[in-house]
Length: 165
Image (cartoon, rainbow, N blue to C red; front, side):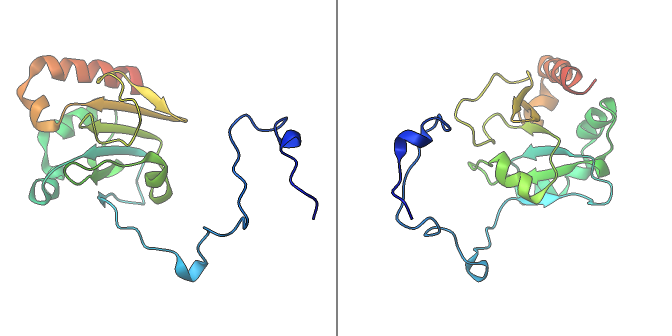
């Protein structure tokens, strides 16, 4: 095999390339792959329409999320039903990477009820949708904070209209 010529590859790649001795050194064999435990996900695979709702709730609160009237009204307003979406409960203080979540679910859009639940470098302003790759994302306050504040409900509604309607 010929020597590595870094000048040649500079024409094709703008990011920094790192040369390792063995290209497969950090790739686990299929039998060595680790099972990564992640957040609790609730969804019906047969009718899932791609909307993922992120929350960070205690287990007993999360188990009752399908009965949340406020959330039901929000989803109906953007033409979704409770059984159409996936609910992801992120551990308190934890964050989730959308690329990792995308391996478990076919994500089309994300609404986060918690402004710091996504593992991203710069957190955008809440209630204004943005994109992570091709995926539109809307950050919002937690459900309990929204239910208590009418002005935040209006901000959420404006953000949802811009994203879905």
